[in-house]
Length: 253
Image 1 (cartoon, rainbow, N blue to C red):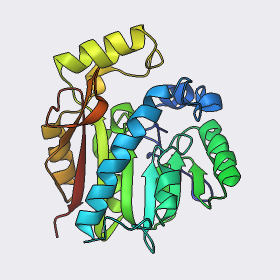
Image 2 (cartoon, rainbow, N blue to C red):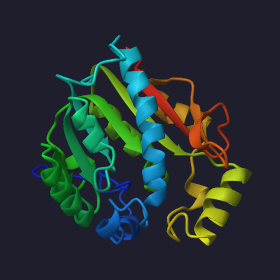
Image 3 (cartoon, rainbow, N blue to C red):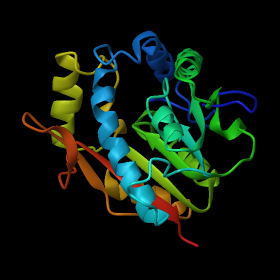
């Protein structure tokens, strides 16, 4: 989350939506966020799947060239709940001027250092989204974040306020199903695939609930795409929404 002068997969939210315990939890993971075998290993596996979806939707939304390596050249992007920058960096490599927001200052410190080492100019901020200067962005992303905020309606409204006319929003989140409770909360945390305490199943958001929240904020949600897992394919895009899903939204007017 963001203040007006500076920079999860937790994030920038109005003060009513920030959960300090969530920010602290993710901040404790900052030191090895970029280690593909560390506590964020699952995010490293998930990131290419999310990025492939985002790239396809960017090309569709702006009628871009799928072969271009700079699909976001000339565009601005805001990643809310950016953690240590796993998504911000590839967005910057696609040509976007990227702002990354997170609730945990430790995550932002790691993100800044990693971007500097990679020669990337990314504007990282720590604090609350509501305190960010009143800018709008062509692309707004928030990956696996809404399930960690206290006031989901306020959070979505603030995301919508940051989206430029004609812009594109991409959100992903676990679905609240019996299967996600068993596998994402129970099994994944039990065997160490996800750090213990990362997920509270009651806070997961169904596609219908997210559609309603987006509609209240003046955004039309596209058809969700599932993110599924199989032993042979690993994490992949799927018609199966039972674990996790990713979706676009755009202004209705």
